[in-house]
Length: 241
Image (tube, rainbow, N blue to C red):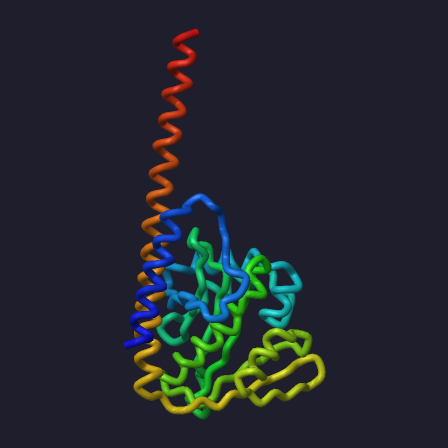
């Protein structure tokens, strides 16, 4: 119950902050240590936002994420081919509902390795250093456990130090083979705690997303009203002349 109360209180506080300072800009915490980060499960309706996030990555970031210099066309094909019925996609949104971090939990298609899954992640440059990659890894690990996955697999370039560090920190076995590195993390079976945590975390994320959506609608309406008032003032000023 303590976890549930903490999640609810954090959601309420986030809503109050956005309503009290709606025009303060995209301010994100410098660190997520000790902070609950809302991580949403994404679906087909989020394809456009996912494409925008990945297409905004520079050439080096695309190289790190995909292992090659992915072109715009290749990224679009990747997004279009995502199977939301099989794999899991997770994301972190800022207060303006811009996708700042994205993770892909891909389940194995091979019947021989049906209990395995691969993890991949990307974080926009402006949002790095806040622990989003690690939070997404933890969330994906919990989700994989609850889905019956026994081993989580990461394939990364050896120069992708942040990703390899996250894997090592969480107890993965890391094997380097020249320019490529593979990490393997054995997952314990799901239990009541992991299932309840995932359920409450998802509810927290969806509630947080709904609050952000309502605030953005309010700001859009407010902006329209301000434009109308400005237009009326200008018209009065012109008629007075």
